Length: 297
Image 1: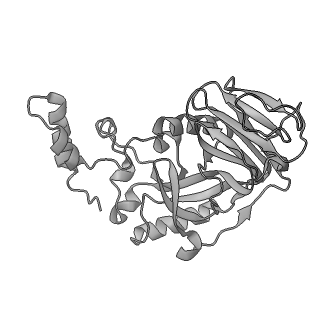
Image 2: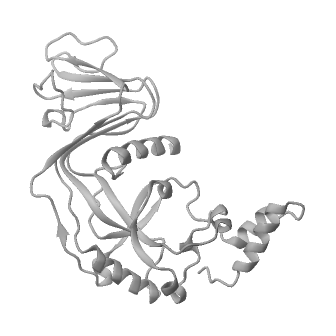
Image 3: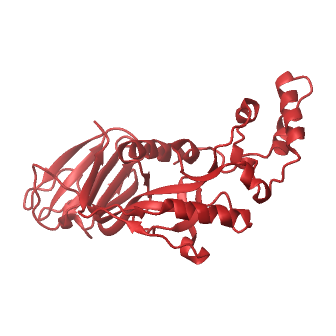
């Protein structure tokens, strides 16, 4: 599951610049505040509940978003009334599409009539969040939804392995030459799936993609600290916030795929790694001792 998510996350991020929502039926609203762990966003609150208001900017015309993994599948179509195909669950009196996946982590994505609103006055939001952090009312691990893609209808299929299969039953005719799996004819039918971890088909009012921002610092820290996977934000406290050049920055791909959800505190590194005979680990220990002056609350 973790490998799959990372591969799919990389493809979708590269294609659209957004984070995929593994459950597009789960609505994500602009200004939502929460945590992003194991590549899933969990909503905890909203900016408005902190007294932070903001303007929303959106595109004037809806568009379609499409992506399919290259060379990842083959499609077989069936028209209504044609004999049922061997091994297929599509009834003889129904039309449909059979998708045979050829490799793992294959994606089929289609979002129709999509708007992508975003928080317009992000600098105002940034200043308010920094103020709240200095007052001890904001957790530096919280993230904010600053942009999202909302689709009238959406299909998202993600195969976990080779030989996965999706059989989509249509309730009417569709264009055999230009198949659109998000068409209304595929909505609310008895589809069949094998080996798919995500299978949303032609569902309405979806939020398949979004962007997140969080508090960051551009203060330079020593290479030794960075080699220990310490970030400048690990050193900042509300009392020392003015020294760390805080700003709101987009959550990066590297941050999304970190194996650990939280960085280890230097003292934890000392306890786990310190061995006197190792020169490098002695450096870790010395560095950890020097960092004990910071408050890691």
